[in-house]
Image (cartoon, rainbow, N blue to C red; front, side, top):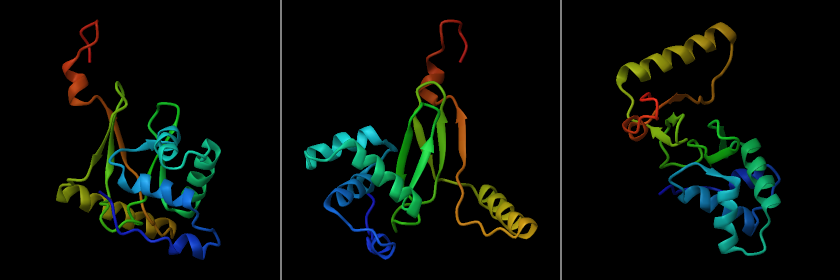
Length: 158
């Protein structure tokens, strides 16, 4: 479970920390998967029956613009959200493995030294070449997950 989150950054940007925003952040903090706005809405509605879907979308957009959440498009026609790993002490930087069949998203964190070295060199090269200070990065690998590989389609192909 993700913990150790501070609301100070939200207050410093001039936003109020409302009960509804606390609920949305708490849902994201406790989530072990990337959630859509609809999924967040269902969870929030059970805790605050008066909360509206529009509030969810507006809050997620605000949090995204402030850098508190990451917004992903995994090719399923809707955005998915998670807390930014720089906002939560116990959240580890990760990349995504996205299954093109079942849309499953696997957080990939067990990097080998060569991967870390390559990313570090790439970021350093970008900084030198373009004078660009990289704050974070997102890497997504698209393919077929282990479970879907076991189930071949009717033509016998993956």
